[in-house]
Length: 242
Image 1 (cartoon, rainbow, N blue to C red):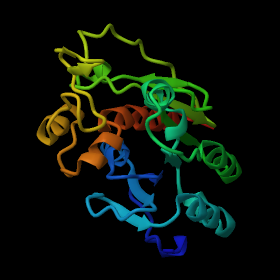
Image 2: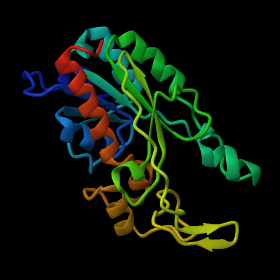
Image 3: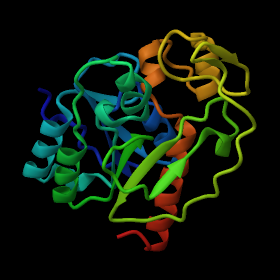
């Protein structure tokens, strides 16, 4: 495993953010646009990740940062731990039809370490039964995107006022239970059922640096984390955040 002590030690010109379970960098890109420098960690190789990257077990990496005191260099930690077992698709259609397999839920152990870190943090999860506080919910319609992609965020050691959730303009395009529905949004998950092409996904999500479908369907739109990052930095600069 790449050791945390190998993170560049030069004083960062901008606040430093740790992007755990970073995938291809959807969240990381938004935070960079908000004003952070970002270090990503993922257990899988992510050659498309556009910022400093460490291939490692995210929780082991975080534990090492805490043990060595290196975690204090970070202003904020964003985490998107796997929780497919409790996402809406798994607990709904897939489970009712006997599809899918066993999935890991790393939300609870992630929270334990984030609390021990002493650093403000974000835990991101899709709609479903993931056991997080829904301190913030964001939707693609809030940012005029071509996806709905509702995501919930638990905020640790800081808070933010929830923005209004606008009315959706229509349905998500694709097949549902044998019937095709048209609409202004594409389905950013899976492969079949009238799912969008990779270029359509890229345009809808605002992601142009990866063309790997799996990475696109797992990512959050950068607009979400840009909004979160900007809100956090605004509080930090005014001394509001803990």
